[in-house]
Image (cartoon, rainbow, N blue to C red; front, side, top):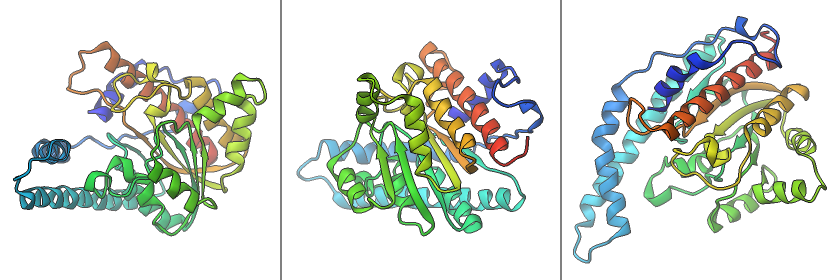
Length: 307
């Protein structure tokens, strides 16, 4: 329900942007939200819950063939979703528009990234995230949100993956990063904060260095849990640490200062649970998410000289 919540809370945003004159002239369109995949999710989610529960509490005589069928069904549905997103994204790109996808969860951008590679051939990715998302088929799910950038790195055309704010990572992901050390450049949260706290590096200087590692064309992947958890308290996997709102905006603005071109983006993991929202902590997610999205849209427009 994240995209609907972002839309609802966007009415709180004034159009004036201190960084971009006449930002309101840009023109932002949100594709009407459809219920097809929501309906499918409500049918498939109980199956995935059953599969995960069996992994967590295995029974000696459990029928493994049923679990295998469940996993195959979930993976096939996820593949279909990826293909549907690719086809829709391709139409948007061909039409000359710049696509930003609102995840829900973070596996969704894969189809969009495939469509952008088809058009642009190569580009870099700026990832703001608490997690590396480099696990191979996490718990058997090929298109898990924990595997989005593992899957992305299998695609030809990704020049660099520069991740910022990662602070929850496993050994498998560290080893994967080391194997791709010419393409994956991590800026782990504890290392960023260590030098900021001891006064040896300002956030502005970090932003300058981080963005300098990216090629001219950049895709922005913004997982809201890359922010400090008080800004996204109801996201699925909040982690202590992370970026403040203004630190994240400064990093995005640095793309414009270094004259990078933002070719597309995603905003993911804006979780609000059941809808309509009744929990104040979930209202924070929707409010912050809508403001991040508006700023990202404006900066994308500026980077493409649309305003």
